[in-house]
Image (cartoon, rainbow, N blue to C red; front, top):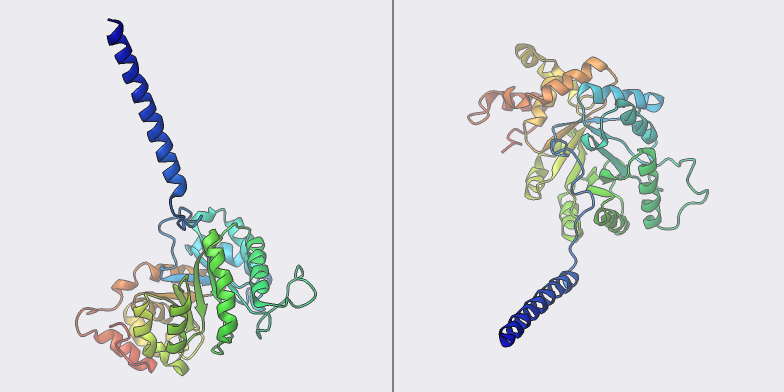
Length: 336
């Protein structure tokens, strides 16, 4: 009887030791697992709010009206709002106040800003900046991001673009230094997505896609005849699954869509709405609009919800879009 009790006791001790050993082994293994990068913002944001949306509201030249305009745009249905840090044509702090005043939760909005190099032609110093010019572009990026977070009253930025002045590309060696700092902010979870503006050079795009650790997901280019509407770059955009943000849609060479007024009338749309639907129908394109007119805001949001049904025979001979493109002076079949 004594021997049986001892045997049972020994078995219990053995099982206890095995359990303890197993727990200790599991804990140690977890500590030794290789570190992986999980952005802190991975769970932030409404699933329907994305840079892949067809429409966004731009705040250029809003000046002292910016806060009210942003509030109006959000109440009209916009969720993607675009501004610029240290940009002479943008009131970034006004955007921060505007989205706050809208009472729409931060996670239901998509806030985008940009980094403007301090020697850029459209750079504007802010009151909180140091008096002397920062020595390196890395320092400029850090100050810009911290300023944008404060101006926008947020602890993360959905998108930051590297800003080129018009189509004059910033020296690549300096751009990539700035990009490395932006990549660090992505790894920290402060920035969610990166992009670049005003690049109409396929070789430049190929180079940054090769060199970047955090790849650009967005390119913001003007929609203009003097750049051939980027038809020749379309394959490159598709190759890298880039979302193309289009500005100067309604106030550039397109004439606000008036060249196709007859088609718009037949479809019971304004020329501006038909213009937006045309660009949205390419796929992977986001229209940047900055109207100050409340009715136009609502019209823009309306067309963003039905653009796929505006043009007929999209899977056939695509006559309507070809006709539209020809009147615009644009090579057709950009969407193939």
